[in-house]
Image 1 (cartoon, each protein chain N blue to C red):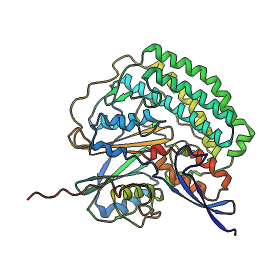
Image 2: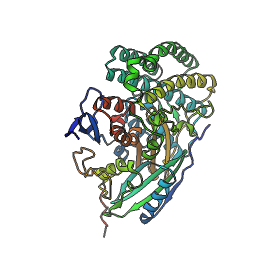
Image 3: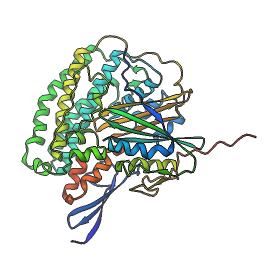
Image 4: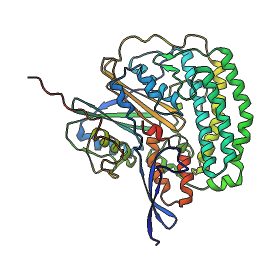
Length: 360
Length: 123
């Protein structure tokens, strides 16, 4: 038995775009134990519900994360709409589905870029982020924002997206598909990339179920807890089927995300074909009543949970968001036990922790 | 017009039933989704959420002030994240927490910032 050493990993580390700290207890090169630590940039956004009315809180919730900002505003709006028994216009639900899937594409492309960067594959990183720019351009052109869109409000969407703009989005995605195929095939077929990921960081179905992991991390081990199977959005109407892989290693988690990019493109194109004409919002009157409501949506990193508690005034008693990374930190601890130090980066990356979300 | 929300199942249980329910759910293959604390006028309400096959069960537990709460981490290890968060932000103490950060989970400038004080009774 070798001497035990504790190696601090993060909060500043080349593989970590955001601050999370891991105390890695090593025996030679092998990780015996990993203790995570967060809280370096905790912002207390949920507490702002006491100072901002329930409508303004939609903008606050959007700022939980700069990657899946649209999803956070949708999740919060859905919870408040449920509490106030508001029926959202059909067209708004379709637009929400389209923009949420666009967010998933850009989030997965951002992640693929970071993965390539962590492997030292700089050109691949740049290609991924170049493709991601097309999605941000769509956001900018249709809503005015690239990161924070401010497109969702309680009762629907702020404005309509004209038919011509939706058709343009489809053309951009169709053109992107060919380039995406070339770039993503490098992740799936290149020997040096496969050597870093195949058989590394295996998580069994039992581990996932026991530790409550979610998102592509769970789906890479064959566990379906994709919240798109629930009723929110237009996924059921569009015949959504979750993407599952069974190997449970870093490569399987990567493959799930790659396949999900193409699936999101298909969902958007199908949704644009089926989107009905009509209003995109309804006037919201009155105050949220006494009571509470829960909504769940599938963010790019997994299921996000939104809880609101009303008290009959315009200020809610509580607005809670449990982000996907919150639920995936325990599995990160598990996957690192017994691995080698040089694999830690790949394992952390393929769980895809978003600390901005976690430190809401 | 569309109203696409999942069924809301929130049951109020007494504090003493919490571990019994947690054990049942763990044995039934549920996962711990989240623990949410709401603090108002010195009282804390805890909401425990569990899910299996897209069916979510929620238990609401009212915690008397200054009472230590039994940790569910014996049944759901992953709940250490939620319990440490509730401890650091709301000041709720947990007993038998399997991975206890002892108030150092979040690096906060003030202790238990989200805990509210009880309203003083007006004579």
